[in-house]
Length: 336
Image (tube, rainbow, N blue to C red; front, top):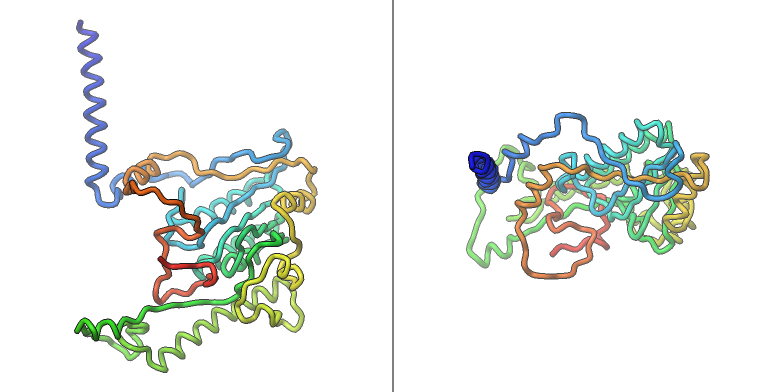
């Protein structure tokens, strides 16, 4: 009888603790309380998942996936953002002596300028010691193509949409709507250009010039990297892509924007050959390990009872932000 009472007491304590934990979770703003408690103290490390090949071999290829818009605001699974996750995976593969080559699988219309440049930079550091093969899938445009420039060898699907070498910045102007509604905006500023891109008034000529000069500077960096990495003559982009247009994978090969066309398996075969590995060398990919903070984040998400089918490379939480520069293909990005 005493043993039974003790068991009931333990169960009651467990249930009480679980209830308290759940209540604290939903009462804490954005669940930051739990995220701080469950912060990973050790260096972030991804788990490995076998993809194909002979798993008994010591030298392997690490496949890293870059899917969707490249943006710091998109949450990561281990790092603070999806960009941090990719950088962590690249560094993990770089530090692993058993990884002989990296295969970066890109399906992205691009994204933030700085985020794309950071990924490109990380790849250039790795390729000094081990080959980085890039595969452009359905989309590898703008910032996605910028990132690909960090690779040693680029393979594109013939029907891939790539190119879109350019920069975009957008801003909304609601001055006309404000007049209809009888609203006005009162702005105090320390300088003439402090409220640049103010949506309540038209942009001045000086503001337009400032923004356009910044666009030109950022585009110059993008184009110079492409020209250098692809070794174009006269240090100039081909006229067919200098205007920011998109091209197919087949056209990209003709324009020497990529090294080969094919399927993912062809890119894997090229990675094995370039790294001088056997034809059945194993391929692994990185996955995020289970962590309670991810469970809390999932539980905290609003559940939508409406069923809908949606195919998009753009997460629902992502929107072009006024005042931010993007290497993003406008042909592929649609705002709701």
